[in-house]
Length: 241
Image (cartoon, rainbow, N blue to C red; front, side):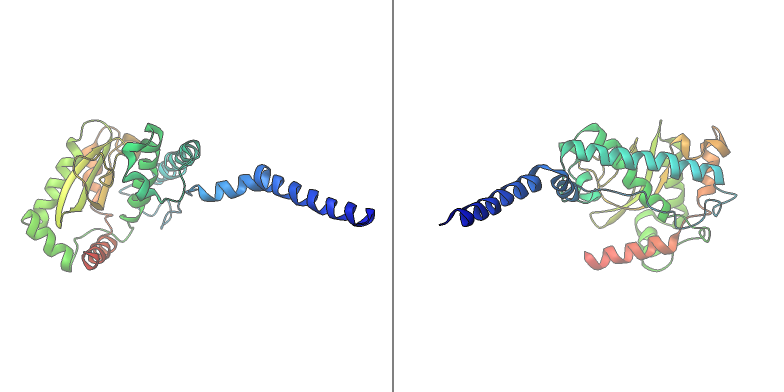
């Protein structure tokens, strides 16, 4: 090998080593790693902030979505990054939340619960469900009114902050509650199941309009329940079972 060829070959080899080194330790490597870590985004509301008036006021919706939900989302992402959790969606993470930190439990629950909550409300909501969901409610609770009473009582009497839920659990509809930002999808939940309807009874969800009158907020909630969406979700769950 002549001197010119030796220099050329050596330069190529050194360039390859430097390229690999840059790939493994530089900015590009950080981007690759971050792509593996779930990055959850604050979802848009499926309606305008004033769409649920007069039952849920505009300022509450803005504060709830842009401040509280946004904060849970940001802190959830930060906690996942700190823990190095990769390749899982939010439900998968929460289904094994006992393995993770309190920050993941609280903020992951806040992210996940609110994302569902916006969907079960609609400016065209209210009334009652039809079809398979109504049949199941009548079967498991006796009547739609009995279900409403049980759900409302659970929401009104829950001590402190938390959520009231209608879930599908072992093929049966059940009403349950969770404290703070816990969810029935979590492995630490007392009653586990798939959420269908949920109501946030943290004070930030109603205090601007209803002050300490949580019962009035719960009663008003029935006017915005999106039974069409919930019924479709229930039908899909039946097909998967």
